[in-house]
Image (cartoon, rainbow, N blue to C red; front, side):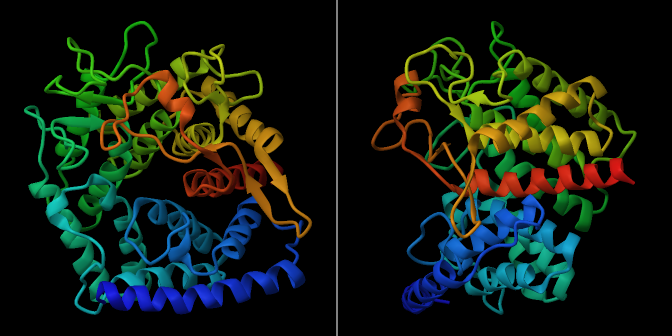
Length: 405
């Protein structure tokens, strides 16, 4: 579909969206007996009747935030078999992907690692429908990884225009798709290049004084945000660590159970959780800038906290977590419920206190300072918290059922 046709379709969908929201606000009240996973999903669908409008988009776009939320909807569909979740995902996928498998708004030559993440929806859609266009689109994203620019040691750059840089965010964007593609379609199933990405993070992004990885690393050491000796950015952004933690567990899912690679990655994940435990607030949450809890205007941030909760719960489910670390994840999830979830008069739930966005470099320039991370807008129902909340809630609900039985 052409860009102009996408814009035209979006105008019609906006009319539908507002009429639907008006109906929802006056007529529809969510059932408070639904589990939290479905309450959040249903609330999100009321806020965004057309999935492409997630993240306040004005027209359909292929983006990582849609990939995150709709992946959680796919997991919900697999649990409940409710067609509304499948149709929500399918409408987004079919708006962006034509019968030839072309992905609208996607440009492979930008080599943006973020654009790989929604590709995980393609595996789900292909498995559910058998339509070739989804596999063709996934093959295109796999080709991007073959050609993607890299550091001298083989780490994927975050984007073509972010020369020589690796960010923690990028591990979530690329590595789980890469591992799942290998798991499903490649023979022999060699995960060395996937593991290499984590090895580069473990080698170059950790600070010795905190035991945690920083947000980004510039191999060239030329960025203003980069230390001139290490190339590291200055601070530990909680959501960046959340992205990294989710990347680890989502890749672990596809590694052979007894492989040395799985054991290595699991050990690094357990180390990350143990180090983050030192900075966990009594509420169970983590601060926006993790290592400076007492700094002026720092705040307990939702997305990083719920991402870590999800990652810990999933690692426990897969038997990749040291048992004594589970309470850290349970406490984080409960902290989000107690501190950051609100309910309106129609029983729709929201997740509050989410950093809207943060990055490094670019224009206007983001210098990675403490003041920068605190200055970014904070909002409710950002998809980077909604998706992980649904995923974490599904794991909590499964655990509760097992304990009850």
